[in-house]
Length: 197
Image 1 (cartoon, rainbow, N blue to C red):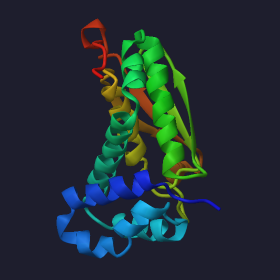
Image 2 (image 1 turned 90 degrees about the horizontal axis):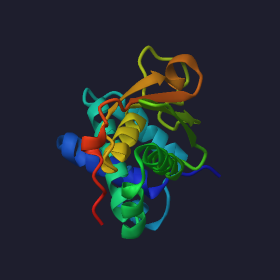
Image 3 (image 1 turned 180 degrees about the vertical axis):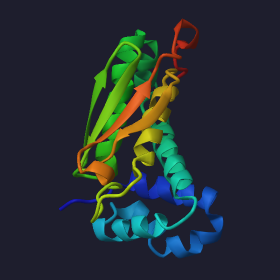
């Protein structure tokens, strides 16, 4: 049975608290703290929350903040030795390791979602299949992958790899998988310090 991980419910709740505090009471009826603590979240309630959120003018900001929080919390919860070990890797290996962390976040968000990465010299792509956010009844004119954009960019930045992320393709727009393109050309030797423990 597909389910939603606690990481998404917690990061979404915090993002709504920060970006839409005046709407928090409404969303808390769906995002109860007991549900976040005790078990994963069901697909039907999360689909309802996403449907309501898409009508909000600040939807994109909520999603971007939630994605950034999910990445930050995941990195912070890693064992210090592993976090430091990734930080000490040569740049190409560090990019791959960071994207493996981002792919793990995608799996933790929704049990049916999967992600794979492809790395090039100055960039990379994160291909997300069965996106929770982009499963819609009819195709839309604009992508809904803001959460994944923030996850990918924030995870890389958390390991000293700043770059720009954008949606290259979205399931909600063309019915295919969601592809996040990452431009890492800004990353050079000057931005390669080891990650502190």
